[in-house]
Every structure is written in C-alpha cells, then in structure tokens.
Image (cartoon, rainbow, N blue to C red; front, side, top):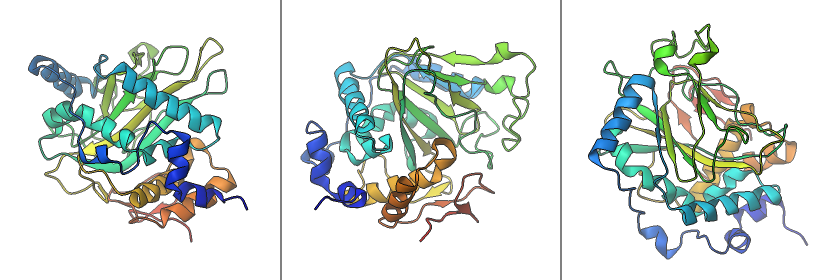
Length: 316
C-alpha cells in the first residue's frame, strides 16, 4: 500500500533516499559550519550599504561544490513535484546560514537570532517562471533604527548563478523610497523614474541581504534562461529586542526533524499568497503544521492569509 504525502514527508528515510549525500539529524548536525571569512573592511562596507540603501551584495564567498550539491537537491525536489521548501528537512540547508554568521554578527550583534521565516526558491526557466512579486518582508512594523541599522534582515543565498534572464532579484534602494522606513505599510514605490530600481545578478555562493522594510522582488524568468534560478532565504533579528516571531531559534542549534516539518508546513500555509496552493498541498501543510509550536507573529498587523491577531493559525 502506497504512503500518503503526509506519511512520506514524515519518513526521514524517504528524504535520505532522495538525497543520500545530505543529512537529517546526522552526526555533522552537531558541528556548526564556520562563517565565511570576510575581512573587517568588507564587513564594514556591507554594513554601510545596509544603512544607506537597505541592502547589500556580497560577491561569491561560499564553496561552489557545496552550493552545487544543494542546488541539485532543490532541482530533484522540483522534479519530484515537492514544494522546494522541503529542502529545509536537511541539516545542510540550516547550516547554510551559519556561513553568513560573520556579517549577521557585524550588523545585528553577537546574540542575533533566527526567525521561523524561510523559503527555498526554484524559479523555473521560461516565460512562466517567476520569483515573488514586489513586497516588503515585514510590512506592518518599522524595523529600522534611527541610525539606519536594521532590527531584522533577510539573508538570501544564491545556490546557482542568478542572471538577468533566469529571474535575479531587484530592489528599490532605501534612499529612493519615499515611504522608507517610517511607513512600510504604504506600498507604493514612491518613485517616478524606473531608473532608481536596481537589478542584482550574482554568482553562485553570493550572499545578498536586505532589511525587512525594503521593497524587493524576484523577476520573471525568460526563454533565454538556461536553467532554473535556485536560492534560499531566511530572516534574522537582533537578540536584544523582543521577538518579532516565535518560536525564535538559535542559529547554531539545528531544530529537531519534527520541528522542521512543523515549521515547513506552517510556512507553506503562510506564503500561499505568493506561491498559490493546490488542495493537496493545503492539506499537507495543515497536517504538518500541527507537529511544532504555532508560529506567532508580533507585527502590528499582518497581510498573509491565515494570520489573525498576530498568530499564524493552521486550520484544523
């Protein structure tokens, strides 16, 4: 008798058979990946970019072989028709963000925390593939300090080359946005000239980041794309402020397999506004979402479906 989608998702051996070079709660899960070795001058340059424009681009600093292995895992999930966020069942996709530890520490402080807010992207080649439409990651709460430093930021890592043809990221720089940072809930671009928009093509292993108030989007792919655009993103916050979301996570302690599945299920439900949700995926997200603590969102308000009164509620 064949297994249901829920049973397969909960079967650790299924995921290992699918990607035998990756691990789930493996021995290596006890060992943090070392941060990318960035000089103080580079770190300070990235901090300055974050303050002035609300984002930065760090050229390739991550191992190309590691990135290719993770990209191949995402491609396989797409071929098998699993939402690619299921890459987060694997240790390596959690450890990936530890590579950005030096810059997170430099900008958010030594006690920064990881939020239960992540996605793994597979933008299919061709005219139909696209990233998420223009948005702010946290549109209902001001997360930028008076000195321009962020309380929270998104780390976006290119697992393969992001090009002008396969759907690279675009941003509206902070100083070109009339609503930044005091009115993030006001979405209009606030510019008359499209020349203010910045395209961010980058090589595999690059680290991009923006604070959660910045307008950004993944562009559409094209018939000139030679393959999918593959990337992973996760949100982080300072450790000396109240949590923006819970359960708040220690970036150097990998969550249990059960917790991973629970958060994955809730993220599927949360971001259906961007990705759409077939009925089978909706059912799966609801079932998996019960496996972990319910995600609480402490914004003043929140635009995502299923989120009411600051709480992400998975329908029973």
